[in-house]
Image (tube, rainbow, N blue to C red):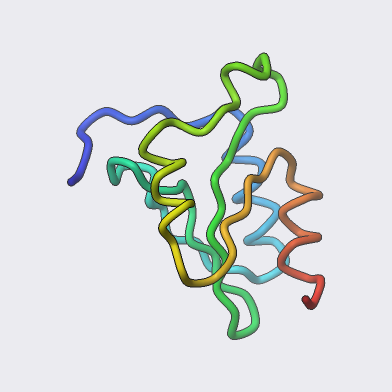
Length: 96
């Protein structure tokens, strides 16, 4: 289901800019209800990113019920909660 109004964390543009700067491709998925924020492709690998803003209080950084349900039921590529551009870059450039 597509949401017509969805909030984007204040740090998401900086994270996307950093990812694109190293050659990652980005698909925005935050408008899908109960879904993660970004699908990231880098060097043949796919990453799921839920963006949370570290400037917000811990209570505001919790996964929504829909996000938590998706994370619990997902059986594919790992689900990452990302707070900073540096963390995002580390995730995609570090081999498991």
